[in-house]
Image 1: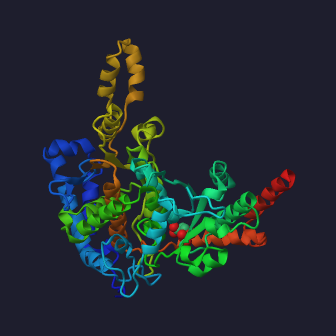
Image 2 (image 1 turned 180 degrees about the vertical axis):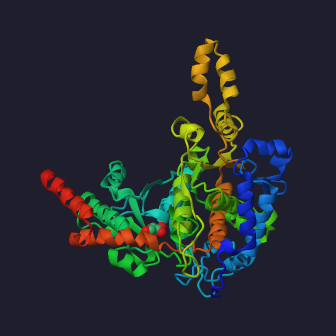
Length: 553
Ligand code: F6P
């Protein structure tokens, strides 16, 4: 199935003009007033996603009522999706069409979790990877000295790091710590080519029991290869030059010949099909560290993703969670000119979620070239950032309250353990922040708040303007019963499909990343000493860095 380029830029679709009119109508309306106008608003703008595998089990609730929109906007956003043929694109996406049209391949990562068939004649077998991971868990892998491998260090960057790192942080601590009577292997991640990251891990590592997994779809990413080489040198320095270093390496890559040429045993190179993009690859063999950390829970993670696939594929747009998440994000970016989105997961286990989401959204839809080669006139992906709640409340929320910028917020709240009062504090904080950042505080409320402190009237008058906050920060609140493998899988797949919805309607290809090649080319030129081709500032910086190096030698 190939992609057709019969494409109409979204601004030419009738619903776009209707949405522009809505934006003008709503732009000056305080968010809180939308609630005053419609007592049923919270209910009407909340979607509930039931887990079809377990009767009456709510898997995920998504409340869009704090977004700057109303039911008419939702209707026209859904009309926009229909006019852009989103339904047909979802069908083709799940049936292996080459929607990654620049690279002429399908984007079928859903197949890794059973959400769709693999592209014809091009399946992915994870059997060998799974056997390897379970052997490692169960203490059956032996290093060059005969010692059991109990430490896995993942060397990868971007999609070969962010997804598994996030999932291990989210789920690792809830997994059993012993299997077959022995302690589970320690799992670490090293992404940065800054020597400090690898050195920090190696400082506490026992070479004889350590395995490095070189995770690189291309097996050509300089940062990862430099770290793999440093790991090899370290192993030699610890185990001696005669040691069989290959006992301490495995790789996840679709460039198996290059991996073998590096020195990885052929039966330890676990493939990753070309139709799984790096930032969509946690479900594939790239998930090896996760499988080692959580064992059978990996299948629950896949099941969560698969159930979100079914929901996305089969549910009418009016009730479809990824469609709403995509459309409301598109509304903020392209119509309300809100170019900043903060992801605020209220869970320590999701502290790496903003980083994962950054790559997913910004590498996928941070683009301006449309399917027909023309330049978009709409604003596409926003700047995505964030941190785990409640940490941000004591750092950057000040700007959200009283700064000059509008920022759209995604609150993600796993409700969690009822027995621990701190968990309740966490959840209440998240809900309170969404409320306060929407409502803001006017001068009267600021005065009233200060009056409670028995201050002199002049002092109240002086301070009150500094307590005013404008509010009106739009947010979506996604609530899960708990952070387990199933719900994490559903959450990540939800965002993946959100990105698909937006990319399709904007008319861009979410599955390539040609932009990042430019910086890599210049880095290669600098490494080979070609500074004369660069601008004067760049050439000067290279020279100054070299001067520093000379002085430190
Ligand atoms: O440079 C960007 C990128 O290609 C990402 O898309 C990818 O996730 C990352 O680098 C790592 O790539 P690889 O897995 O091939 O090392």
